Length: 125
Image (cartoon, rainbow, N blue to C red):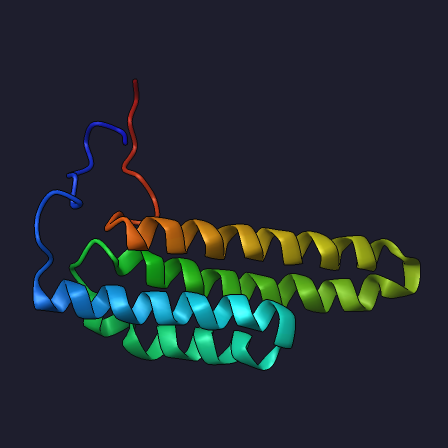
């Protein structure tokens, strides 16, 4: 922890925060399943987009931004990768997008289940 971020693991969650946490974990699980099946990738992203407003003002809010951002950047780089498969470099790009997505989803699940925001606050020290 950065020293500036409140330790949310020590206090009980409000019902609103519990709901935001449950929904973000569901979205992360769908996204991880989507890494292997494809269709769940879209379901997880849509779930996060629909439920994001319910998490406004909670420390789980940036988890939703992470899921939605990972989805859109993953789609963008996957399309570029598919186009570049004609030159083999696309396969490397697609593999990198796959690994990057898995990392972001696993990190998100780990931090959400620990009642932490996805990004730590900036610490200049």
